[in-house]
Image 1 (cartoon, one colour):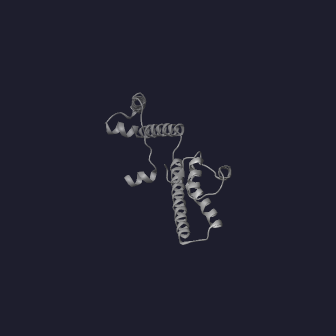
Image 2 (cartoon, one colour; image 1 turned 90 degrees about the horizontal axis):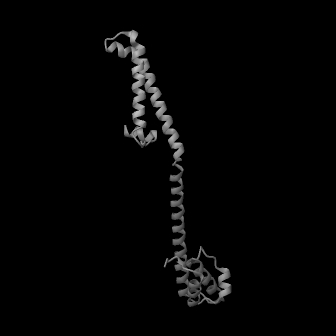
Image 3 (cartoon, helix red, strand yellow; image 1 turned 60 degrees about the vertical axis):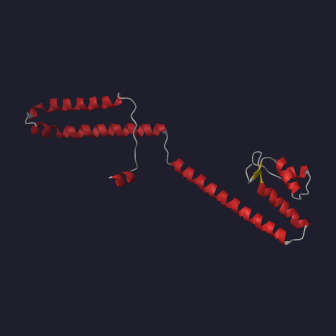
Length: 178
C-alpha cells in the first residue's frame, strides 16, 4: 500500500478509530475528501491531531507526534513541489514539439528551396562550366537542359527511394557541431 494514502475511506476510518479518533462513520466520511478512492494519510493524521489537541493536554508524546506530523507535512509538500516541477519540465519539453503536418511542410519547403537554389547556382555557372570544359559558349542552352534534367532526375531518385527521414537541428546546435 502507498505510504501516503489509504486505499479507501473504510481503511482510513479504521486507522482513524484505532488511533483514538472519536467521530462516527457518517461524520468521518462527510469530512474526508478522497482522490479517486485514495485518502490522504496526512489529512487523517491532521484531523486526529486536531481532535487530540481539543481533548488532551499536550504532553511530550503529543509534542513528538506534532513534530512527526509537521515533518511528514513538510516531506509531502516537498514531494508535491518536486512533482509540480517535473510536470512543468515535461510541459516545457512538450512545447518544443511541432505537429507532424507542420514538420512535413517545413521539410517540403526546405527541399524545394534547396532544389531551386542549386538550379539557380548551376544556371549562373553554365558559361563557366562550358569554358572549363573547353567548349562552345553557344551550347549554353543545351548544357542548361542537361543540368536541369540531372537535377530533376536526382530529385525523382530521392522521391522514389522510399521514406526519407530528415532531422532538422536548431541553428545553435548546428554552429556547435561545426
